[in-house]
Amino acid sequence: MQQEVIIVGGGMVGLSLALMLAKTNIAVKLLEAISYPNYDDANLAPYHSSFDARNSALSRRSVQIYQELGIWDSLQQYATPILEVNITEEGSFGKARLIAAQEKVESFGQVIENAWLGRVLLSEVKKNPLIELIDGVQVTSLKQDEHLAYLEASKANKHLQFKSKLVIAADGRDSFCRKALGVGASVHDYDQVAIVTTVQTSKPHSHVGFERFSPLGPLALLPLPGEYRRSVVWPVPKGTEGEWLGDENDQHFLDALQKTYGDRAGKFEKTGRRFSFPLSQVLSEKQAIGRVVLMGNAAHTIHPVAGQGFNLCMRDAYVLTRYLKQQVIKNADLGEVAVLKEYEKSRLKDQQRVIKFCDSVVRGFSNQNPILKFVRNTGLMCFENIPGIKPLVANYAMGLKA
Ligand SMILES: Cc1cc2nc3c(=O)[nH]c(=O)nc-3n(C[C@H](O)[C@H](O)[C@H](O)COP(=O)(O)OP(=O)(O)OC[C@H]3O[C@@H](n4cnc5c(N)ncnc54)[C@H](O)[C@@H]3O)c2cc1C
Image (cartoon, rainbow, N blue to C red; front, side, top):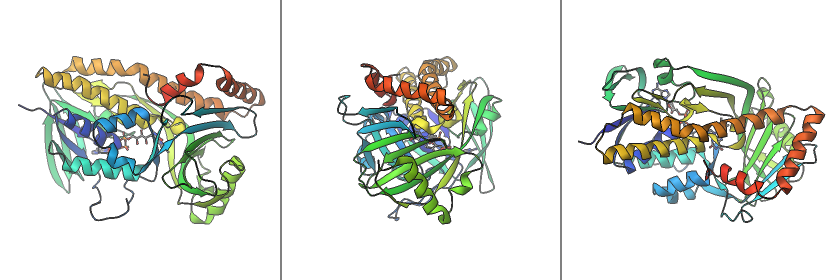
């Protein structure tokens, strides 16, 4: 008999994982707290709390996974490739350039608006006969014994109960499921919020992404579909976001970008509405707990400085699917504790490398001490000039080396 897995949380990770499992012939029940909008007859993708105003830089590995799922063709029209990355620090000499052609890859990855990614994922999930999507349902209890995991939930005042051999909790940074299981998490507040928006510049982006370390915080400018549109992610000190949000601050924001980037992107002509996201690192103490696996931000939430968070989650989801596929082939229990533990162990190296890298970049570049500034700019110059480093870093960033 076909076994069914329950996923709690239909954000970008929960939906992607559901498609991976269904491709492996595993049935999925997906429970999402928020009611999804009806996208069917809308021309534009309205924002939804799970697929908001952010843009995601998808690594080559994530793109490959969507290709394997057969949905990259639907996503590609909303994505734009990154052919070059420039890393610099405002007011300093150091600079590094990564060029896809020199690394003999077609691109380092693709940038896509979360609103479109969510819309495509949702429509694929809805038409997949192996996935039952229940939205507007809030999971309120999670317990387990030796044989099964049990969930209680509420949907429009109705009380619902579910059980399964395996529950995957992709319910975000503040994961209810993690707390319900009594699993702790280490939390580091960066005291920053990311200001996120889309801008238009007078120079075409030419598929170049910029990472510019400014005294306020590391500012990422990434190409978007449309020659002159670029995505902005600018982490600024918590409490200062009021200065940048709101239509009345449009020009002030554009001026700040201009000052930080100089002429590199041409004139910053227009800005979209700005949104803010508090930034913290939240690392769960465990990811496989009996018959429950924590996935996505519920397992590890990291700083967006290098655009690695979702890509790391995609690799986790892919590897878990591979383990579960073996269980299907053996006709064995999908929630077998030893197998889930084995999955957890297999992911630690990749996770720790990415988590450490992102955290060190944030901490390393936030100190304005002149000696430290000199040291990191010398580091950037070494990165630029020492042969052999670039291919290694590029492979890690593309998610091709774990
Ligand atoms: C500013 C910013 C920029 C980023 N840019 C990038 C990037 O360029 N590249 C990249 O790889 N990563 C990036 N990331 C990271 C990426 O956004 C996250 O890794 C990703 O959103 C995690 O998705 P998730 O599905 O795990 O969590 P979420 O998006 O938080 O989804 C969790 C879902 O669970 C649901 N839920 C919660 N509780 C319950 C409950 N009790 N019952 C039922 N459902 C529930 C919620 O409604 C939600 O839909 C960025 C992050 C930030 C903050």
